[in-house]
Length: 166
Length: 257
Image (cartoon, rainbow over the protein chains, first blue to last red):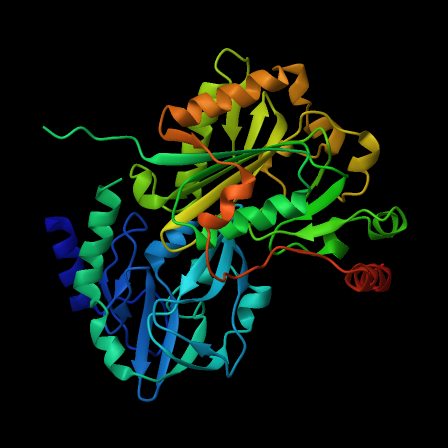
């Protein structure tokens, strides 16, 4: 735990990021691939999806913890634009290691954009879960739902407890 | 002092049930039931090709012969690869609430490892059994193919066991682009083996039920009584491919040739 706190403060001091994106998201900690990265500025569901709320648009994907546990993603099934998603309901699925795993939406709303790059490059979910591996963009119908989600520290603790229990 | 009881597992024994019907049942029980289920199907009625969720017939099948010989092609709700099943195939499916198997995380590799351990009990004393990458093998030859579907609080792990096979049927399947590393470049007949050469059929079924019974309290349920366990609407994604879809696949194969 002390090592992670050091890594977190060092990472923040150095403004380390897991990608070269312009999104100004900083890792809460990211010392090595032994630890899944959790980014500041996002909200997290206990089913391991993340949400980035930016004005009237919310971008949704799955976390580094999720992609690491799922294994190599070989196929992604996503909804159509203009369809609806509901909080904690299934909106799509990924296939990895012989398994289909459903993806739950952290919030409700209308799908306004789908990441079509995932059709030909499903592995973006593994290599860039918070950036190029985003899945859908949604116009939230109930922004208050975002307040029910976890912040980075809470989600980090949640993942640690979940892994420790098995 | 509290005594922990093993969680309940409903056992459904089928014989010769069409694989489409079996998969529809499994998808229904996964999505619309809250119980744990072990389904054993002793063979299916006619040779049938079963692809995983993302399977593309043009890439996985010799579509011309499949159409000519009128082999049914199913796309199932779980991941994984393509198999051709028939009356000799044995099917075992395990549907579990994640909380009833607390040592197993609801992720593919964790479920796969748990299954490997379970079948390790079944094949105790049989030389060479192991879970290798994601297959059950004797030595380096595959006899059991696995697939899973993981939803919010439940998962299914199902297996088709290659009791025996007809070499002619294998010819309907192309060599897939993604193969396990241990396959090397072997074709189907060099890669698979017949389970019947290693264990008696009834022995396998009873040992499987016993191994599951070591972790769960088993209760036999008749198929006719399933309605009381699985109520309400659910997503149905398992389906038979249409002739039009197969013909389109053949046309796209011809175009890219």
